[in-house]
Image 1 (cartoon, rainbow, N blue to C red):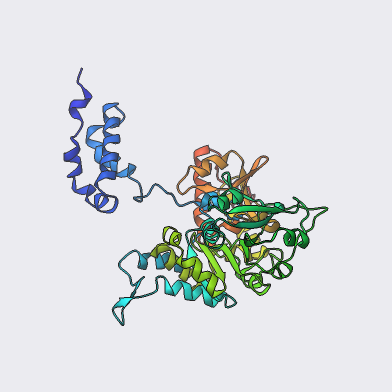
Image 2: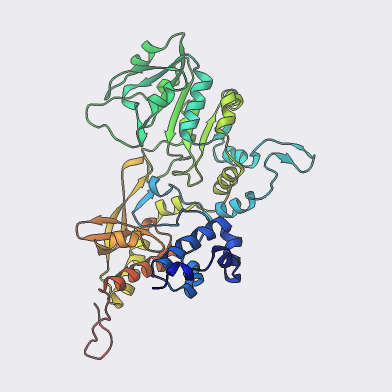
Length: 449
């Protein structure tokens, strides 16, 4: 009996095959070699003929050098944390390509001297929120809060309502984050009711600042009371407000979602927010406020550890200066437009014998924002069993299962991806064996499925 290992082409020989030269250039020698080794094992197992090894390697190579995969978000959750939150606009992606090379991120080409890092992105933020005396950018909103505590309350107290002790996901809690700065939390009020007198009684010589956190991922209703920003601004200490979602100005669909401009006008000393939620940009922590406070935060030694890179700065500036980002487009999408798209996709699928129909559904903002807001939407419903098969397809399509149907909500699908979504559904139907030509009508023409 012939040993199959004797017929396995050597790794160095396969690597030298001209058909793999482009893959090595694009993916790197290590990635290609790993695929070759895995394919050689298939030859040893008798699954692949030795002469077909290079063809098998080519078909098994990843499309990109990263293990991340592009996903079609058909969940109806606009800012989906598990899917990377805000998808970047075309302008932001183009900016990433520019920033990937050598840039003038911290250099003045005219004078040949060092310049303010990220000045373009900072100017764009200032233009977007002119009520801010100054702005700053860090890694994420949690970093913005931590840096604020390190700057304004080292060894001091942060006054915070018990009703705003928020867990932000994956077990991370704002009180524990703040305590990690070395500050002490001074709890005031109760879970459901906090008054101005509660704050006044807590403020003393050890107070670093009063913190107001927007409870963006939950709602407390019934017998409740909270203190407005204008009242809190009358207290003789800095007022820091975490608005969370990154909304820079009021939005008509989100009347209860705080925004940076309105919060500053109400008297906040410093406002923190996320860049990758309703703003629709890259992950970043945004700080807006009085120039003296922002400068103190910027110059704190820990600010260096929370500094953003040139890619974030470029994408943030392009998001602010460029066309409407996908998050805003999804939020503002008209229900009638979504219906027309859903009916067109469903009709095309049904015409090919695929079990699909256009259905009304409800979308959500997501990302810990506007938890009570539901947006009317339309989607394409297919068998529930196809949900898992769509997720493992190419590209993966992620929907949501309701009963016996998997709904693909089009509010979160870019119109340019409609054909991709339809192709993914068709591929699953064909693999499932449930796709069939429509029955002919009496005139001999295809009829409805």
